[in-house]
Image 1 (tube, rainbow, N blue to C red):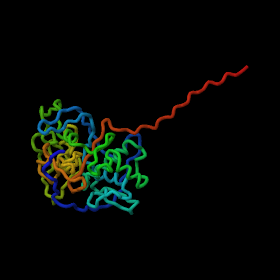
Image 2: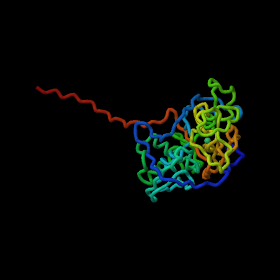
Image 3: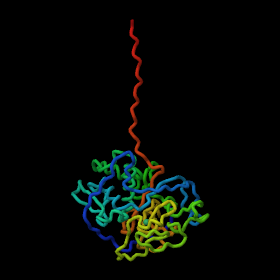
Image 4: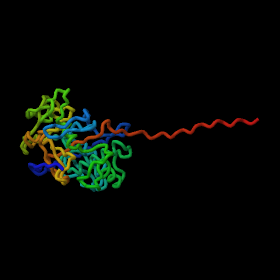
Length: 339
Ligand SMILES: [Ca+2]
């Protein structure tokens, strides 16, 4: 159990975002895993030592983590695949997702113009089910496209990386998971780890996820300078959140963007045996929330307007193997003709 003192608090209740419905194409089937348009970065340097300041960040193996927070467009593709009947509360009216049609034939699309905004108003359970679906579509060709039935949709969301029946929002990651919500060490390493050869400070990690021990300056979308982040916005500020990757010069060593700020991110770690962890702060919080020491936590069924997530997976990534070719029986020699 990890002791975390501060409970997460949202600054304001959710707002309903309305817009036009736009069709979002599903990923085309092919030889490569249809991982939507998620960009992945590889977190190498396996077996790294933990941060002496916190004891966090040690990861034994190589893994991949999404470069960005999961976007509204990516979540809409997930809903389109598994929520035609909307039986698990995966869609919420305050999300940046518009729903059309009737129960049994619901369709979903990101609100126009917000496709690249970070997905928010998601519970940790929603994130687990997104990871489960991603687990399946990366490895099983039959999981591509819309689920064939409510039972098929349940298979895609309730099993895979997490067996929801084994603990709901507190279920543990399954050993064979092919996509998951990063645990604290994985998230921490991707954000703060500076291998010595990269010029990082020896014997300790960066304090901020922008390759810096100095607090980031406040940037605005499109700024390309280093060590920038958006924070301390007022909830009435029209800028609120930004498209993912809007400050491309402020990546972590491994290439992730927005681990500090934009939106808080769910982390797999359990807290007090009843809650899940949050890290990184949001555009609405102070710069201290981006620090390596900063954590928050919430029950896995809560949702707020400034909480989103990113995903991780094995490296090398899973691939869909071609069907095994049936062995060709050896040709029997023709019987010799009898004289
Ligand atoms: Ca973030």
